[in-house]
Length: 363
Image (cartoon, rainbow, N blue to C red; front, side, top):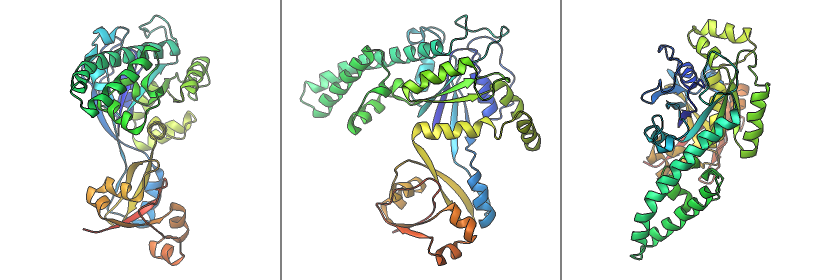
């Protein structure tokens, strides 16, 4: 799972990235394009259920799910035509699964805003416009080759031309491709081009320390906009999170409590990213390890097994499943089985978030 952090210059992207990845890099200067190459970090996805499972199983190690974050340089108006660092950074966005757009929702005369004023919806419009223009360029470049191949009678190429034209017509209405209804085959073609505006978006409202829950008017503007597009909004104070990231665990907990927060931003963001991407977790538990695995909502037992190893999916026989609640009540798997709360599920079983599983398969 990979998410790209984007936004206008000086909105707090790199500060947030460094906080989330516990980076100790020097504080970035207050000017655009301080990120010269996209920084990448692999972070563990916080999930308190892992510790609870481990308290009963006593494994040698605990392995949480992983999230790859990519900090991409600030995008400015005209980026699709090469302004700022232009297409170089737009191309990095094509490789991620979801876009996290950091939107400035605080006033500070000491931090220059590239547009001269703080306006969350206008900031989003600038980024979205540049991504749409970049997609238009990509489709303009792709359609000629597809049309030439289609003239030879190639059925796949004809389908490709139809999909490209459908996307072009949608973008001409100044609408991102994530709003375009596509069937499975069409979506596969669009995904093959790495269309920027087809990717799901999560908005992070970068707030100041006096508005940690995002109740201020700037965040409300952002929420109203996001609600119309079906996107989630997570308020985060990047400055505070960067300060918390520099502390040891005990001091982090104390500081969070002092400002009225129950958990750091990474936990909140991780859940929001899962929701944005339509993902959930299941667990495997044994003496060697307790581990979280990431799967799409609606995945079947064999598909979930395939995340561990493709052979597990091919040779899937059945999955033995129990819940965290059953583990807490009965404490041991043998007791769960004896109580009749360990279920045997077949190939049609649709996985549920938090399932604890053993897969049986033919080698």
